Structure formats: C-alpha cells, structure tokens
Amino acid sequence: MANLTFPFDTETYVSRRKILMESVGSGKILFLGNQDVGMNCEDNVYHFRQDSTFLYYIGINLVNLNAILDCDSGEVTIFGDDASLDLIVWMGNQPKLAELGAKVGITSIKPSSALADYVHKDIKYLPPYRGRHEVTLRDLLGVTSLSPDMGLIHAIVKQRNIKTQEEIAQLDQACTHTAKMHETVLRNATPDMMEYHLVSMANKYVFDNNLQWSFPTILTKNGQTLHNHYHGNQIKEGDMVLFDGGIELPSLYCGDMTRTFPASGKFSSMQASLYNIVYDSYQTALNDSKPGVFYKDVHLAVARTMVEGLKSLGLMKGDVDEAVATGAHSLFFPHGLGHMLGMDVHDMENLGEIYVGYDETVEKSTQFGLRSLRLGRRLVEGFAITIEPGIYLIPELIDKFKGENMHADFLNYAEIEKYRNIGGIRIEDDYIITADGNRRLGEPLANDLVSIEEMRTEAIA
Ligand SMILES: [Mn+2]
Image (cartoon, rainbow, N blue to C red; front, side, top):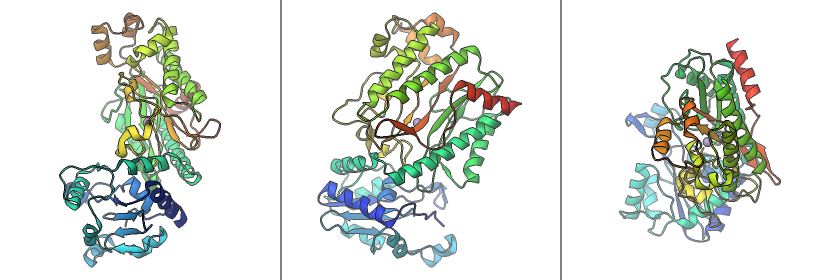
C-alpha cells in the first residue's frame, strides 16, 4: 500500500489552498497528480514519487489523482477512483478516497472519468515535466501547444519559497537523517573499497530508516565531475572521495549535503590547502547569508574568498575584484553557491528555476559559472537554501582555458598544472534564513578539516 502519512493537520492543507486561491484571484486551477511509471513494462514500475505541488496542496500521496481548485467558489474537487476488486487483489486493500479527502479537508470526490467535463480551455495549469502529463493536458484542452499560467506559477513560488515552522521541522528531520547518512560513510569507508561499497553503506542507512534518496547519489573519487553517478572505481590511498547525497522523508521534504574526505586518514598538503579554501569560502557564505542580501552577492563574496586563497597558493594572481568580475575563478568554481530546498531538492525547479531563484530585482548572468547560480534573489526569512562552495580541477576545462590563454592576467597556468589531477572538493549544508541571519537545518555534522580527518582516522584504525 502507498505511503499515506499526513505530516500536517487538516487545517494546514485547507489554509494552503485558501492562500493560493486568494493569491490567484479567479478562475480554476488544475493540479495533476503523478502516476506509476513503467521501467520496462507497465506493471514493473519505478518507485512512485508524487508531484510535490500536488502533495503540498492536496496532501494525498497516492497514484492517479487529479484536483481542481475553483478560486471563485472556493470549492476543491479530487478526481480519482477507489480501488477495484482486481486492484485490491493485486495491491491489497486501499483507503477510500472519501476517508483520505477528509484528512486534508476535501469532501468533493469525483471519478477520474469526470475530469474532462470540468476542464475548460481557460483553466490554469503548471508546466508538465512528465510526458504523460503533457499528453493528458493536450487531450483535455484540445490544444497542440501548452501555455502554463504565469500567475499561478508566481503564486505557488511565493507561497512555497517561505517555509513555515511545521515545514522547517520536516526539513530539520530530513537534514538530520542526511547528516547521519554522511557520517556513516565518513566513519566506515576504508581505502581499497569500491565506490559502490560506499554507496551501499549510504543506501543501508536510507533503507534501514524506510526513507528515500532526494536525488540519485553522487559518490566518486572523481569529484571534479559535478554530477558523477558512476560508482565503479576502486578507491585508493591518497584519493579524495566526494559524496553528495540527500534523504527524502515520506512528506517529501529533503536534505542535500556534500562532504569530501581523504580515503586515508589525512589529506595531502595540496589537498588540505584547497580544502581549507573551500572551508573559508563556506564561512564567508555563512557570514553573509541573511535577509535582505542578494544571494548573487553572497556567491560573489564567496568567489572573492576563493580567489584570495588561490592567490596565496599561487594558482591565481592579480586584483581579486577584477578576477571575480571577469569570471576567472570559474575555472575552479564553475557552478552556483546554492539553491532553494524544500519538497524538491532543487525546490520547484519544475515550475521554472528562474521564477524560484530570481525576480525582477536581479537578473541571471550569462557568464560561465555565474550563469549556473540557481538562486540569485534577495534572501527572505523562511527561505531554505543550500550553501555549497567547491573547488575543482577539471583537466578538460584547464586545457580549454589554457589553450585560449583565457584570463591570463589572473590564472597562473604553470602552478595550476601541478594540481591538475587532484580532483574536486565541495562542502554542502542546508540552512534556513532567520530574522537576523541563518541557522543550519538538522543536527550538524562537522565539516572542518580537523574533524573530517579525526572521523577518517577512526574509520581506518
Ligand atoms: Mn545541492
């Protein structure tokens, strides 16, 4: 049977929908819930993942449901079918939709087949991210090209970007689990293991606690590859391992953390000097992240800390502000400092990353590196964000920059070559923006060099 926990009171779901309908003003809103998706045939399915927006407003973590909210009358209707006897034989008994609706304050339940009668061409809907939803929308609306409603997108983003206390409690739980999963790997990985042995340790934590990943895990000795899902390498003495993984609760609230650690007990001196620059950059982000500050400016302050550190190592040179303005540091830091976090690991990215992380007060840069910053807008109390600076030595990128003599005033290529094969380092934790600053979500896991080495020394002792 599906995971039908209700983390919040009925009143929470009622009030979320009321706020949305008032914010949208008039007309009808269509929310499509998710279906099972076949891996290789219809009945052999991937893990079911409800749509986050559907779950946020409708609260029922079950397949094959849709809903319509009527902003003019305030009426909310769920479209779905109670389990047939055949399905009960296959899946076991299921709660009746009327019972489930009562838990989220919805009394109007209609069969799936009735949905078409209630959908009119001016109904407001969100951009689909699954092929099946795209087909459903085209069929229901009788159109070939879709036009999701911008007002609806903005209203949802405005509401979901600010986390309430009960949501923060969920995020705290998800981040505590995420930290414990990371600690398990940090304390138990030994040199000579395969990367997949470490993934398996992390997975054991996830399954022992009946949880899910918030995204496919990144665990690799090739941390310079930003989204490396290959786990087939053997780890050796002297390697660094980068583990970026997060846990999703049944409520879908999730964590997203990264730790980078030496396979042996100690970082080499070159690894340590880069690690400490990432750590200092992380501290800059902690100092600067508070309400009213553009996260884009926090990203740029972090970049300056990085350039100062890289200058002290001799990898960069010249004026720090100019180096950051021209984007010279993007050779080492080609991604953004962080993103919104919530029921999605990149919260609401399906609605459009730009609408979540940017607004009319700040434009997304087109510069390499800075253009990958998912969150640029002014921070507001209640935003849940990741802080994830990193330094990477990507041989192919070094070759391109060097070949074109790019940023030659700021990059010392002869020194950079000495670090060419060192890999990548990232430190990532999750924070909630508070009235006067920020607070780490969940029970913390140390990320300073000394603590990481201590945990590693115990592991290999
Ligand atoms: Mn992240």
